[in-house]
Amino acid sequence: MSQQSAVPKPSLQGVRTKVRKGQVKAQAKHEPAVFRDQLYKHLETVPENDFEGFSAKLVQAGGTLEYLKYADALFEILLVGGLIQPGGSYLDDGAPMSPFSIFNARNPPDLEELKKYVDVFNKLNRRFKYLQKPFEEQSLPTLLQYIGRWSSEQRDKLAMTLGLLLSQGLVTAACLQSLTKDHLVKNDQSINILALVFSAYLTDQSIDHLAATLKRGNIKDLLLFFPPNKRDAKVLDAFFREKNLPTVADWYTKKQYAIAKDAIMKELKEVVERSDDSESIISAIQSKLEEQRLPEAELIQSIWQGLMASVDWSARPDQIEGLALREVGKFAPVLVAFCKGPKTQVALINIVQVYCYDDTRVMKAFPQILKVLYNKDCVSDQAIIYWHQKGSKPQGRQHFLKATEGLVKFLQEQEESEEDEDEE
Image (cartoon, rainbow, N blue to C red; front, side):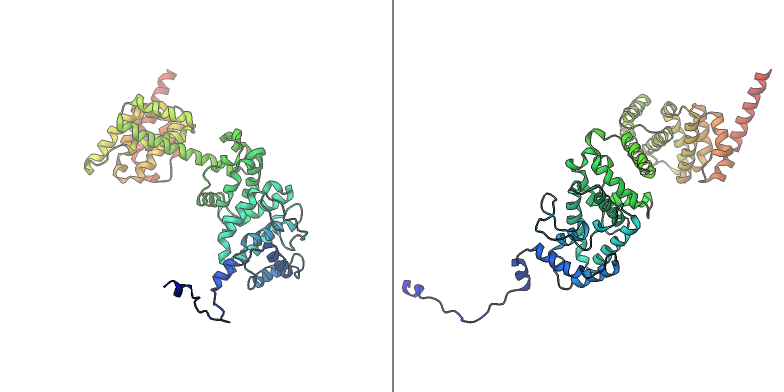
């Protein structure tokens, strides 16, 4: 047996073993510099500022060059003009800058010119759809973390280009996460870049469109782009107003208000489930306001919605109106505590109007609810009269104005009689 095992096995001579193409590519040497030189040969033939020509050449080159394998190198060349080494510096091998890159745009950066560069990226990614993922998940985040390496003009060009790419839906806002790194947020570097991104974005799109883009990109808090010692809502508001971006400041404020309102409504529901004592509810609201202040109108809306959400509305249909009046009377001390000014009182009436309009079960009870609020000193007669004359909301306006005519007439007559007594 041992002698047989020592005999060499026969083999075929002069036969080539077939290897799969994918295996050959996987084993091939990664040579981004060679890829760059080959790409340059295509781009060098295009006249300067011939954007249609650059688009055509990039599509043509994609037929022979391995764009997917060298996606990072491709976008480094097209965005910043050359290959980038770890650390953010250019590869020092004597190669010239790319014939096409956004850094070739004129100074100072011009948004209309940069749109032509962005159009080249749009056509490239539409033709080679597999480039979309490495573009937004690898290339852009990597280049953004090195943004401190570029000159101020180059940073501006990259930021404005990114804003245009985002506004056209060519990339998601997830790439902006790179700007929240510690070495970038210091010295206001990240937030200044973000301001340029937003400014370019808002030239073509609305603030609501931008808000939706940020939400899809999981950008939850703009304060993370500020240095740690400046992460304050007032600082953010002042910064964006100074940068002539008041819509961003207003949007962020409204967003913070919405978060605070949700927190108050959630807290109210939990407190009422434990105890419906008015003092406990007022104390819980005040503790939440210490975390985030709210305008009085926004606050009273969240209190009303939170209190109404805590009510068990599972009564018979013919008992719903009576239940609503009892609950409003029970929670009136809470409303009184935070409904002090005339504007807030009118706001409360409008909140109740819209609530009754949305919930048809209590729509007929609106005049009675208004009486309860008046009798409990939540709203004044002047607030009711002003609401009836010119302060009502459009939702169900004619119905509610007609339903409260009797109450308003009574209040007006009472007010006139008091004036007559004062004159006597």
